[in-house]
Image (tube, rainbow, N blue to C red; front, top):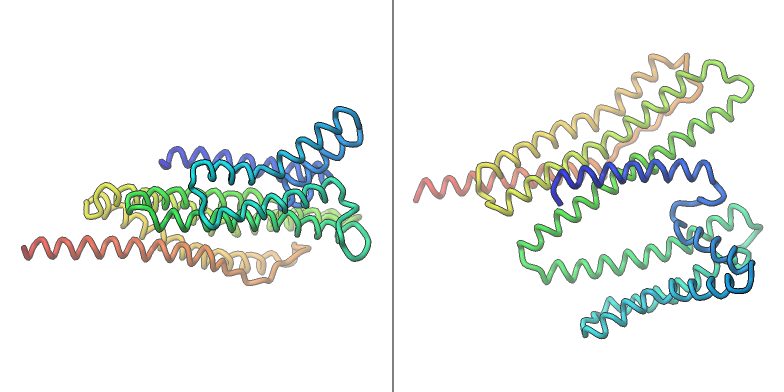
Length: 322
């Protein structure tokens, strides 16, 4: 994927994530836990159709059956092409699981949970839907591993670009999905805790937004590193020892350096800023957050860029000796 196309994809991902947060806040009963999407919503639709009876009930049963046997249809297609691998049999288990989970989403009162419905039922739904996603992820990863090890180096370059693009989308969702949802939830908690004493909450709200921005910096830097990394991979694909590949590697190294500095210093700057305005804040965050994943990701990209530059230097030395 080219960087221009990836920019459009990330923009659409950001918009979709923001809309999802707004929908979840505006229609909490319809859009509950994110991990339950779209199974919970499908369950609500099927239950609504089945309660109407007649043709609607028949349609609900047929739709339920088709959704549940979809993995088996994929397995059947592979069987026709005689391309079934051992990991493909996970699709059978996935089909049985879909039958069960969708049925429970249609009939949440039958979910076998201890205690009263409510929060316990919500947790049980998250477990059911999370198990489906876990099984799907397991299947996709196993398939990806087989494809990776059976592919040529040039194909691996394309897969690497694809994986980096997906990772950039995940970082975008982390910012505009879970991050935005968290900051709105924090504002609601602060507002509820100060009912009847709302005056003077503006500084606290501002610091909550600042915290959201600072917490988003590691993900934003990781996205920028991905853009530079894709540029490097494209140049490396054409000629790993070219001057443009070296320049792309140096650019990646510079971004990694700046990114690591900004990531480490941002939380400290926020804590110092809180100290300056401590008398005006109703809520103070004293946690020391170290985004290890983002740091490791950026550090890995830095090591890759250094390896590319080292290989280019070694080749130049060998060419000069020859």
